Amino acid sequence: MKPNALCIIGLATTILGATTALAQERVVHVYNWSDYIDETILTDFTKETGIKVVYDVFDSNELVETKLLAGGSGYDVVVPTGPFLARQIQAGVFQKLDKSKLPNLVNLWPLVSERLAKYDPGNEYAVNYMWGTTGIGYNVAKVKAALGDTPVDSWDVLFKPENAEKLKACGINMLDASDETFAIGMNYIGKDPDSKATADLQAGGEVYKQIRPSIKTFNSSAYINDLANGDICMTVGWSGDILQAKSRAEEAKNGVEIEYVIPKEGTYMWFDNLAIPADAKNVEEAHAFINYLMKPEVIAKASNYVQYANGNLAAQKVMEESVVKNPAVYPSETTLAKLFTISPYGPKEQRVINREWTAIKTGK
Image (tube, rainbow, N blue to C red; front, side):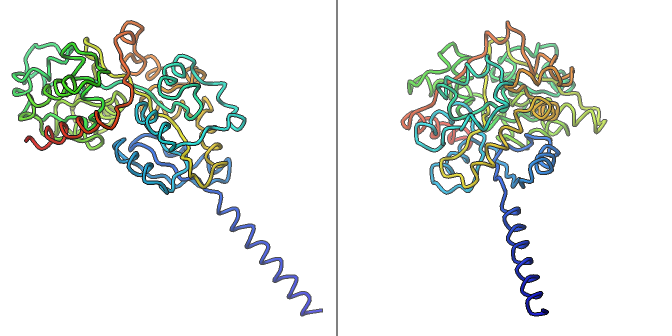
């Protein structure tokens, strides 16, 4: 009897071990922008589904694109911005979503889905996570000290070299996102922000070359703390990032007052979207993660934390009023009419932008 009992125990242990291993294998690898989620959402997702989240962050679309185009990125869910999403769909980087596994799509906001369809016709490959604007974040006291009563309501406050020179001492950061910055530059000088003409792109870049001597840093993540700490006084940045800086300064009670403005000339409206790479290893888990984020109370929690608008209409009923009623997060209809989107750059245009942006950043 004892040998049989031992065999049974051994077999049971083997089965239990295999079951445990299988349970541990339920994982989803997520690649998202830095400072872009309330991390309790990840732990809550694991509690509800048993799926572990391996979460990595990035701070530029170019970095994501390089990994995806090389293949074998190892990620199951990534978060590309609109023009990059469109280009990557064309390159065959993503797989179509199985909408039967995404019942929470019923909560989406038709207005956002329609605009996203510019990059993803039929909304077949992606679901909007967050959207927002690229504008000016600034330290109220330091900018007033530098510029006096000059109103902070126009791109002039930064793009006029004489203004930038006055701000140099207190620190200017430029968002390191060339696709957006060139479009904003072209829009500022009265050109089509979606132009792909080399001369127009170079003209957009010239806006930044004129103020390059006054720019302190180029980054897309560290500027949040730099602004909150008073290390810089003005930045071109993403709406939610700047509102996060405002919150951090208020929590630190360091006397730094931060504001965000969408300049009157208009600016870029961007969309960050959830998509599944074609070579994802955990497709079921990826769908489960995206569907979970589309729960109104979950995406509302994310928006409350990052202070960005999301593409989920139902979530607006459960979001904090300070977020959903903030025109810096959800702009008025008048402001919305001045926001523009851009289509993907082709290889030729991308080379022009990369060359020009490198020259701007290096000051050469």
